[in-house]
Length: 464
View 1 (cartoon, rainbow, N blue to C red):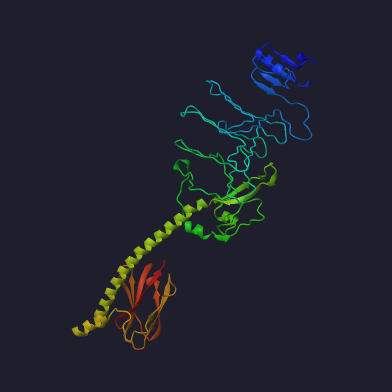
View 2 (view 1 turned 60 degrees about the vertical axis):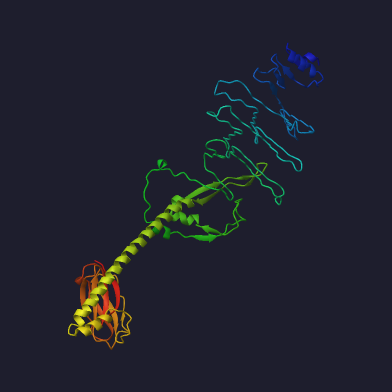
C-alpha cells in the first residue's frame, strides 16, 4: 500500500512532520492530520477542528484482556529531587474566557452502552515505605475570591436503580499495624465559613460516629404550629426503657457495637410517639469490584433528640410541684403554730378555769407538749381518718388510755379557725364519725386532746 494511502497529510509543516514520523507504521494504521495540527487516529477522514487528538477504537472487543481507546505509559527512574513527578497522562485546559457558561475540562471521560461503565478511572500503587498514592487527584483554584465556585472533584450519577455520585473504598490488608483508612477524607479552611462536607439529603452511617460537636437546625423562622408540651409525665410513663446488646452476627452488614446499650425498642416507642420513629433504608454494601455483598435493607430508627423537650417539660412540671409543696408546707407550718396556740388557749380556758393562778401556770407549762411523761397520755394514739378523702362521712379512730380523764377531738380549717369540738367518751379504741354535711368542702386538720395535752394532729380532705 502506498504511503499516500496511509496518510492524508495536508499542506502544513505539522502534517508533514507527523506523516514522516509515522511512515514506518504498519499498513493497518489510520492517521489523519489536518492543517491546524489536529490529529485523528482510527477516525478515518472524520476529524473536527475542535479536537486536537482523536483516538477511535471500533470493532469487537477481545475475549481476554482490557480494550483501550488510548493507553499512555510512562516508565522512568527518578534520581534526585528536581523532578518529583512522573505523569502517565496529564490534561490542561486554559483559555481567556468571558463567557460564564463555558467550562474548561483538563480531562474528561465518558462510558456508555455497557453493563458496567467507568468514565474515568485512576489507580496508584507504591513501594514499601512509600508516602502518598492518589488514584485520582484534583486541584481547583480561582483567581477571584468574590464569586464563582471551584470543584476539585465533581461527580454526578443518575438513571440507575442505585446511584453513587462518589463511590470510595479504603482497605488495608494488615489491620494490626498503626494504620488508618479513610474512604473519603475532606478538609476545608481559609474561608469565613468552612464545611469539609455538605450533604443536601439524608445521611446514612453504618458505624459509630465520632464528632466534637453536633448542631441541629432549630430556628423559629423554619417552624409552624408551635405549641407548648403538655402532660409530659403522662407520656413518659408509657415509655419502656430497655438495656440490650446488638446482634453482631446476623446483622446484614450492620456494624454494631458489641457493648451494652440503653434505649428503646422502636416498635414500642412507635405506639406512643410515632413522630419520633422513622423507616430507614440501609444501602447495599459493595466490594471493590462493585459486587453486592449485603443487599439493601429497611429498618426502624429513633430520633432520640426529640425526647429531650419531653424530659425538659417533665422536669419543669416536677419542679413546679416541688415549689408548690414548699409553699404549702410553709403555710401549713404557720397554720400548725396557730393551731397550737389556739389549743393551748382552749386548754387554759376550758380545763383550768376553776383552778388558782399557780395551778394554771403549772398546767400551761405541760399543755400542748407532745411526748411528755404523763402516764395518762403515754399510750394515746390518733389514727388517720378513713376514708380520706371523703364526701359524706369519715371515721376517726383513736386510742384513749384508761388513766385519762378528759378527751376531745378538735377540727380546724386551713386558716386555723376552730370549726368543731367533739367530746370523746369511753376508753381504749374510740371511733368517731364526722359528717361532711356539717362542713364545706376543703382540707381540714383534726387534733386529739387528752387532759389538756395535744397527742397528734392529722389532715383530712372533704370533697364535694
